[in-house]
Length: 70
Figure 1 (cartoon, one colour):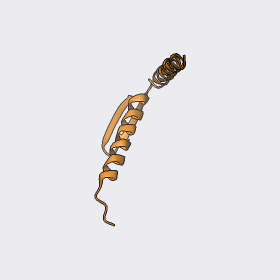
Figure 2 (cartoon, rainbow, N blue to C red; figure 1 turned 60 degrees about the vertical axis):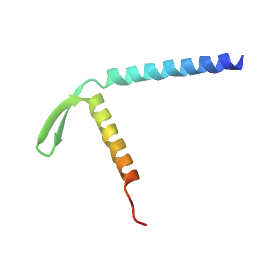
Figure 3 (spheres, rainbow, N blue to C red; figure 1 turned 45 degrees about the vertical axis):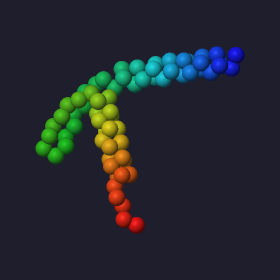
Figure 4 (cartoon, helix red, strand yellow; figure 1 turned 90 degrees about the horizontal axis):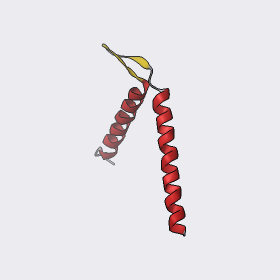
C-alpha cells in the first residue's frame, strides 16, 4: 500500500513539474536584445536564462576544481 502511494506522489509531482515548466516556456518566448562588448545578439528570454544558468554552472564547477593553495 505504501509503495503505491509513493508511486502516485512521484507521478503527481512529475506532472506538476512538467506543467510549471511548460508555463515557464510559454511565458518567456519573447525576444530580447543582448549587447556584450562588440556583439549584438537577439534571442528568446528562455534561451538567455538557460545560457546564463549553464555559464554559471560551468564557472562554479571550474572554481570548485581549481587547485587552491592553502
